[in-house]
Image 1 (cartoon, one colour):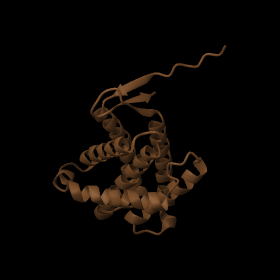
Image 2 (tube, rainbow, N blue to C red):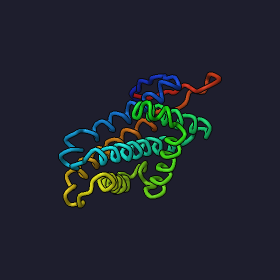
Image 3 (cartoon, one colour):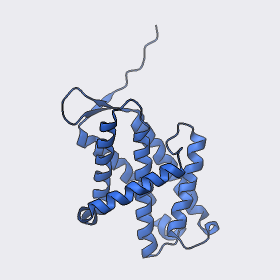
Image 4 (spheres, rainbow, N blue to C red):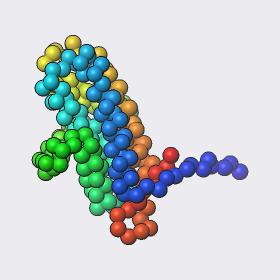
Length: 196
């Protein structure tokens, strides 16, 4: 008789779960904002860096939310509540007081970006790594084009680095979504079980 390996699980409150997602998104956000990438590889000026950081936030948040939305067998209400909490937590940390002052405008902007990215890149949370890879490389090219005024050939190293970051982020987000499930034993906001 073969024994299955016991997989440890963590129980997180609703807020802790949203904060965990925020931490994951911020990790890849900070990697992609590395001055080596933004200054040297993309050659961004102050305006380009601002545009890049905003578009990068939209791309990473969209990857995380799409991974979460692709999760099956979760009630729509819980899925929406969790997505809203993840969005709010990340935007509050990434944009600080500007987000607090213009919460509705930020939420509407990032919702439109999410809808756009899901429409043009329907496979960003696909289990098929090849389909996902093609679309994430496209998003890396999009980020470089939005921020840098240089031709794409001059941004090849930056696009490659961004592609690696986005591929890694998508894999982590998909794994986090797959290993998470709501624990509905208590009334109110759900707790989540996250398999390590």
